[in-house]
Image 1 (cartoon, one colour):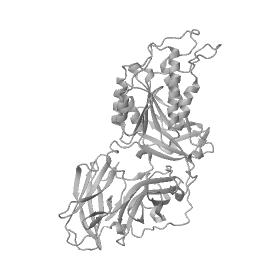
Image 2 (tube, one colour):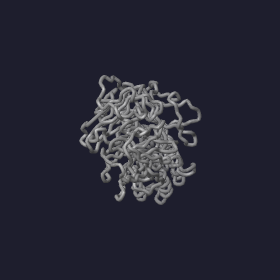
Image 3 (spheres, helix red, strand yellow):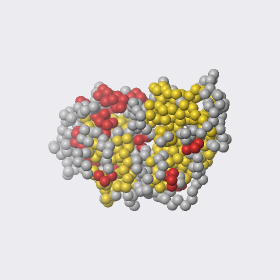
Image 4 (cartoon, one colour):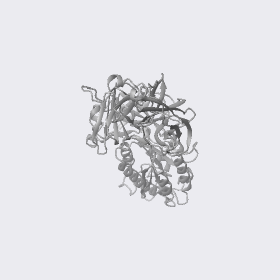
Length: 594
């Protein structure tokens, strides 16, 4: 029942955000630095990722020069249930929210028909371990080409894999092996080239029974043979992989390898062509790409399980930019980590796009410049969200934005937020004042008409790193009878005040908060807060919302939902509000627990 109007002890959203400056402040000179990003993975010998790497443990040589490490970001793969039917809780420029891109490339010319079962079983395990946000592609080489492009519809890969059969020759000779290797590597390089320049790693799982190492296939006194295989052919794969950020895993199905069946070629002389050992070609490919060789059987958890484990965490190392970086050409790269007993996954070379490829990306951008381009700036990891409420005038819709750096202890020196409509037109913006920058999260508000908007937040930290975060929202108030409801906001209770929170971890409870407008004293209202795994799934927990007056025609419904025992993941939090005799109306928000 709605009671008489009186002062609310816990600050309502109206009071909490009153006085926030909407107008842009002038004369903020801060500008960002466009660092050169290098992705690496650091793992223990058992494949377990290192999750506490420090910037001072890393040394980088790029294009022959030592580069100072300016930033270090740890990127974790999405949680296993992050793709369930709930919207994202916030917008983020963290690559973790994108999911991994895994290209399964199968050399079907390397194994005989009838031996596909081992590969299919391993891929089944891979599919079970992927997050719904991970993207998977299926490619067969040398002739099959792209079967399934990178997609989150993983079942497409399972179905397409059922049509892949072995095509190896019986009694493959050394020259046959060299010719097949050349065709396979050229096809693999072509696929990597099609990926173009990437900002995030492409995990390439290359499954083959064996490859030839470089060989002349003719006596040194004669012209090269038809199946000559040079180191340049392997290098083409490395160059294409440098632009695609390819993290290579060369997987050999031990039970179908063709070693031992290769006949020695003597048509142009004896003992001239080089080794016919199919493992040597795998080692050569792994060497030029910085990859790792795994056996499909025999390793703990399976080779593809090892791939998932090792790629669950990687780092983005931001180094001082150099004049040669963005030339589009491959540059030699050497990354070392001083911590003993770890393995570094870093390719021997890397390539960055030419400036004209990224013409919309300004150099050393200011926050306002970052608002005006579609480029995602990632040097400074950010998260941002927004919710709708009624302004103090009782007529205008207010969109309150929350933004914060993902890395604890980061000090922001400038932050700007803006709302864009469906046509990309700037509708409103605000600039954080210095006292607001010291708050976590940084909170601001803009008045807009109801509708669909894209929120973009741009910020720079004390070290000069730039970052943007985008979040799509529907600015509206939901109505139930004479009542209108604000968005649900999640947070914590601190010293009697409600403090919004974008992400939760070890907190025992989360506070759900929703404002009601237009009620009258004595109106019978029911209000419940639920948490579920899916947007429309059954409630795991349900608690009542306490309704308190917050001003003329305003009320606050607030409740504490226990989350301490919930496993990490994304959950739908639903506030159900109804007037006696009428169906309840709900408003929802996603809660993320790490």
